[in-house]
Image 1 (cartoon, rainbow, N blue to C red):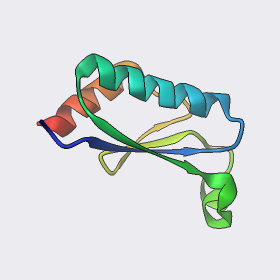
Image 2: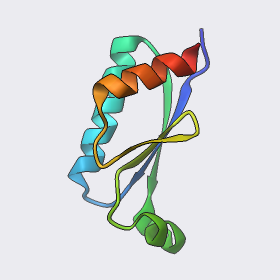
Image 3: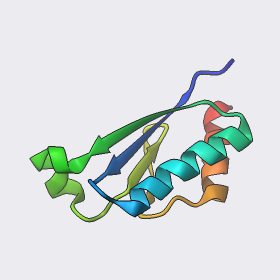
Image 4: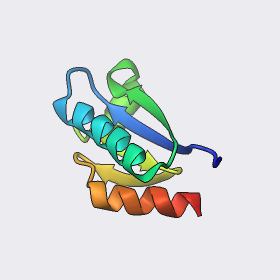
Length: 86
């Protein structure tokens, strides 16, 4: 089995778009059978991150690269996860 693809989602407290982003990552990973290791980082708990990302969340990194801001496009995520497995 392949190693999980690391996914980092920068979030904020009570952020519905952040919840949607996480759900989309889980759904696409399940559909593609690509294992993912999701790390949620709440920018509200760190002044430096809060200053860097502010209201620009969710901010999603896939396999160490910036991938999405605000919304996760399922088709593009599918491509990125598949490419990370090759």
